[in-house]
Image (cartoon, rainbow, N blue to C red):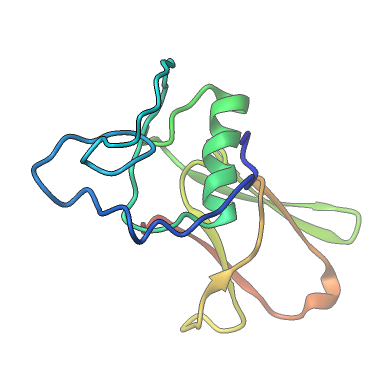
Length: 137
């Protein structure tokens, strides 16, 4: 909810969406769960894997701070500046596109920098680091 995990449950017994049946939000394709209700839904998407906390927050951040959908491509810029002795990395149009990765060597291994906003401060004591944005799924 609003970019934060509220609940998590295994859904291995309810089937999957890889068949010719209808897609029912919140249940499998049989529609046997008798739950009446209605809602307005904006930016509905289905992933074939669980999203990371970073990815989930990125979608929320984009919608609330730049009125962007998670599926709208655009030009992405990675900037660098300093605040005191810290190096500050920023990227735009925000956290919607890409994941900030870090490595101590250009050949990797690359891992998530753990940034949950499109601003990441690198303290000078961290040593040699390389950063890049990844646009893979």
